[in-house]
Image (cartoon, rainbow, N blue to C red):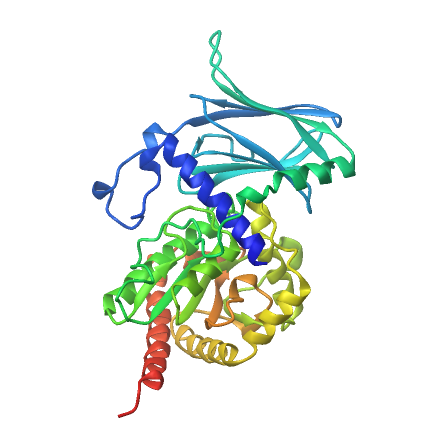
Length: 428
């Protein structure tokens, strides 16, 4: 598992560096600073203005219109079959439904920011295919620069060799390499700041929208707004240090979110999400608090954990193939003291939240969320509500509701950490 996580980290770091070469101002280490204190590079980013597919099940071509040339890197991934194209950060001005329908070898495709300074396009394939050509055309004869990916059908064995070849040993980082996460919420672990640290994790981001309301609101935006408000509320108290896994619309792999908590010696990890149910599955409402379990507390919890754990595949990197033995070790460790503290905080949080917001009929649940698997950090995942429920969505988009609920969550965090500080203090 560590090897896979390091591979993801390295890819992120490599492309972050590449993006910095193309757009030096695009990589900001101060996402929470005021606009006047950070360089504005939005106007300098390449713009993607149109996209189309051509071809059939033997050969398929993807064409993206740009306003300037860019560098690209394309590679295949398996389980499921995909082709990933990494590019410097691009502003996508494409139709809202672009990528939903495929053609030929491309079942569908997604695109978006995957890290500060880097964007990504992910093609879901209908079957094994190889990248026959990947290039960017110069502007000519009144036509704009164009990114072109030409895919060709191949057999399963050849596809497997291509996937293996793309995983080059020289791409693997040192064991101590950290995630490519620009964090301005607090100092690094080496800082003399001795305050207990709480890591706040806004779910999804970048290429991964999470759930989406029928009215257009995305989970990634709703939970980021809540998480930033929670950070500000806790920092205002001054007793605790806050670290965010993301402070803007950036994709962060699940393993990196856990890594942030562990490398910062977090005393608590809180992941913020907002669920949804398909129309055919009826309606549900209210906030739910999850802790880690090797077996989900109910079918709904199990299904949610499965969908959340596949988030890395959306970004083009699939981390679902962890060895069972490793997962068993993590679960065993989590069952010890860390799980006790996680459950204690979950109950405390439920009691605080129910004073300000509607709770689910079963507010405390457990499931196998990968983002909760830091064996030495008490962790919970909070589903603030259902974007598929009209009343919950009204709450999620209300500043008044957000302020009240942020206050209740902050109160729970501060009470939990205060008790741990007292219990950890040496006796006279």
